[in-house]
Length: 58
Image 1 (spheres, rainbow, N blue to C red):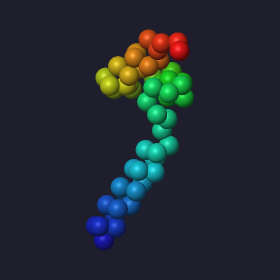
Image 2: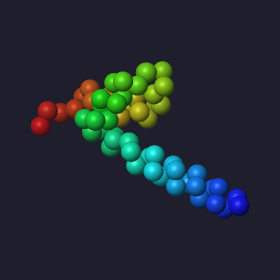
Image 3: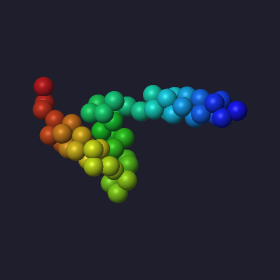
Image 4: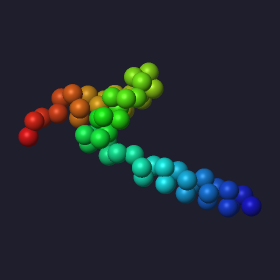
C-alpha cells in the first residue's frame, strides 16, 4: 500500500515538473514576470537576472 502511494506521488511530481518551461527560455522569463517577486527563490532570482535582464542580443 505504501509503495503504491509513494509511486503515485513520484509520478505526479515528474508529470508536473515536465510542464515547466526551461530555465532561461523566453517562456520562463514571461512566467517569472507574472510570479510575485516575494515567491522567487534565490536561484530563480539569479537565473532571471542572468537570462532575462542581462541576456545578450544575439
